[in-house]
Length: 127
Image 1: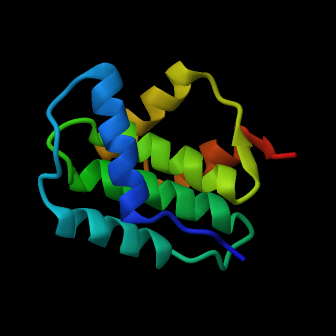
Image 2 (image 1 turned 45 degrees about the vertical axis):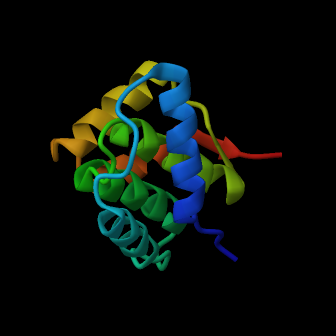
């Protein structure tokens, strides 16, 4: 069974990231955050790489909706990582490659399917 991410979890991660690395606190639009999460969950896992497509949808929807005043790309990447982790996958990509990919995804220069492929190629089963 697929485990999804709750808004409260992302809000806690956001607070932690702002405390550690700085930036503007707060949610710009909580409805956008909730919609980003709902749309990601509805991206479904009917294809072979379902968990990766859902993770990619989390990344795209959060980074493009920009629901936070600051740090939305960080939170999008944390959502991707966390979703894959709780669903039995471990990202192995270098941090610079993950950052580059999430920035390209947020700008629409990398598609969701391409990002899903990147995630699949750069993940291992979690023990």
